[in-house]
Image (tube, rainbow, N blue to C red; front, side):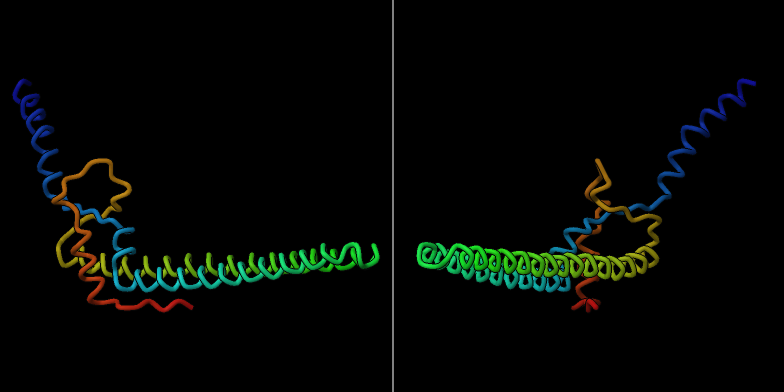
Length: 173
């Protein structure tokens, strides 16, 4: 009975370490790859360009509306009250229309960003799958899901190099 107990204790203690030592786990920083890969930088540049374009358009609209309001206020004492109200209402309608257009443009940018990240992750997953097969890796975990890990388990830079070699640009529909 003592032998069985002793063997069971040894098996539980050493067996657990044997199983853990055979499992090959790596982790990567997906955000780092997205921000630093050639394709990721191109996507971010497109997003920034679209945002700048939208902001420039918005500033032009604001400037135009401010000028129209100033003109209307300057004419307040010269034109009739009905004409003033009509002009004011027209400006308000135009502001609402512009706000609607800007909201649509903003939604397009958000959709583009989400689509780009989704396609990027699909391509990254293919590369990680190949990498895990070639290097006999059992599991690859996102770095953001790890509290503590040895730096030797991180494969971000290796994956980034492979990603940059295979994928130069991602086409978004």
